[in-house]
Length: 116
Image 1 (cartoon, rainbow, N blue to C red):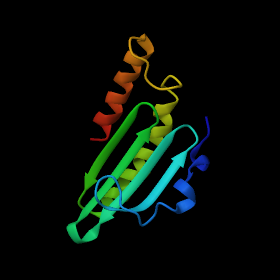
Image 2 (cartoon, rainbow, N blue to C red):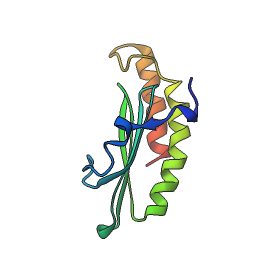
Image 3 (cartoon, rainbow, N blue to C red):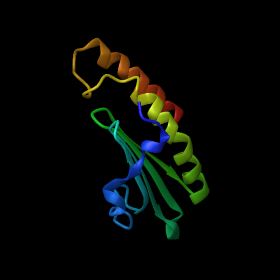
Image 4 (tube, rainbow, N blue to C red):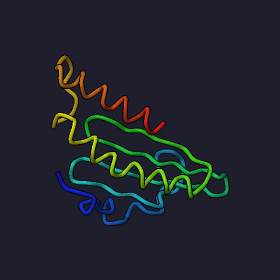
């Protein structure tokens, strides 16, 4: 598995400044070749900050914060946790009725519980 160094800006940084899925402006947006993405949106006038992570074929999860410092701390905490999570999941995404998918569901649930 690639490490922290493999994270790269999404679309070479062209997503920065665009509107994000949670209604803020994208200020940080990185992806990892293992199918991971981490996006930070902000709208400081509303004290709105969102960190959204994705694991291709498995998960999209957003968290919301009232300060920039909290959002950046969450980003730094979630980034290595996503790398730890993805190595525990079967390649190719969820496949209904397979035991590995059920086991992966528990791991995904634990991740979401850790990062509510």
